[in-house]
Length: 349
Ligand SMILES: Nc1ncnc2c1ncn2[C@@H]1O[C@H](COP(=O)(O)OP(=O)(O)OP(=O)(O)O)[C@@H](O)[C@H]1O
Ligand SMILES: [Mg+2]
Image (tube, rainbow, N blue to C red; front, side, top):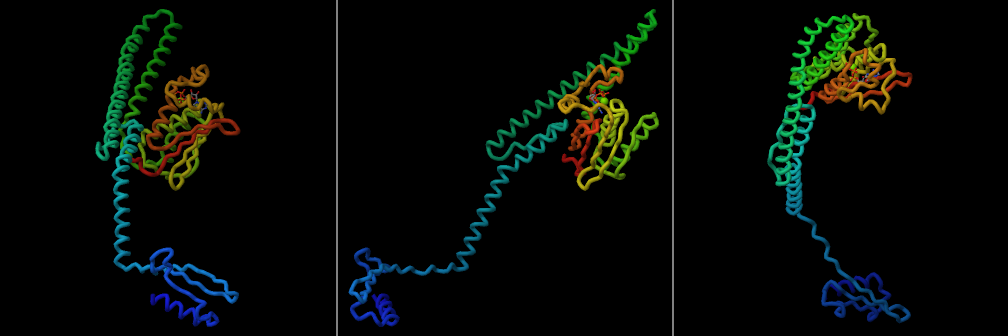
């Protein structure tokens, strides 16, 4: 064809030493009838031939703007659709997270929307059902415990009158002391049950100021309590609840560790409060138990101090309710350090 003749002419121009019949160029009919395939044979000076197969590639056609645009649009469309799909699939899952956090913090159930893909919808129905059951269970138990605690106060009050008739003065005093203890136990239990459900408003709370009132109070009662660190450390929270939590920690430090050193550290994202004492501390394997309700480590030691093992439980619950953390560890030089971290971000609803 004309194409191959042009090629032959060019080759002879470049290499004039190849003589007339020493160069054969033609379509390679033995391989295929493809116009892109050619066979070139060149005779070398020693009369041997070199055969070369040639493939003519058609140069790629540069993509016009139209193609580029439509390809880009298609890709964008695919991305948008995938994002929407991902949102559709995972969107409801965020609701599950919020709801479970909410429930965990002892609040009411937040029902998740029963929509989305079928599997998610079924999960939502089951999840909501579970939430309702848990809330009902907690309510029933709380109510039963509160009712018993409350009703026990009446017979205790009656016993208090009857004890006046006991002739033996020693026995009378002992019974009265026992009744006092029973009453205090009931009061604490009721406070514990109520405290869990207290619906105090969340507003900015000055942690240093709260600790100031607690430590001033303790100092006035002749207790060795000190406060140091950053003033004006604010977090969003429930004032009375937080006061109670810190009060319990400081009370423990004084009760078991002779004194309390309170330190406030105002950090960019959180306020860290540590309460340190110089007592026996808590063995690391006992920390978990100490946080459980109605657990007193070494009851013999605590009998005199009259605790019911609720102080740490309540403090822990309140701090977790603020999405903070309470950790207990022993100082290398002895004594317990209770560390409270409270985030500055408002607790999510
Ligand atoms: N600072 C501390 N040093 C050593 N042991 C502690 C300290 N704080 C708490 N404990 C131990 O952990 C137990 C549980 O503490 P918690 O405050 O929950 O209960 P409590 O002090 O016994 O009673 P309550 O606080 O209800 O009056 C305590 O009985 C005590 O044995
Ligand atoms: Mg206590």
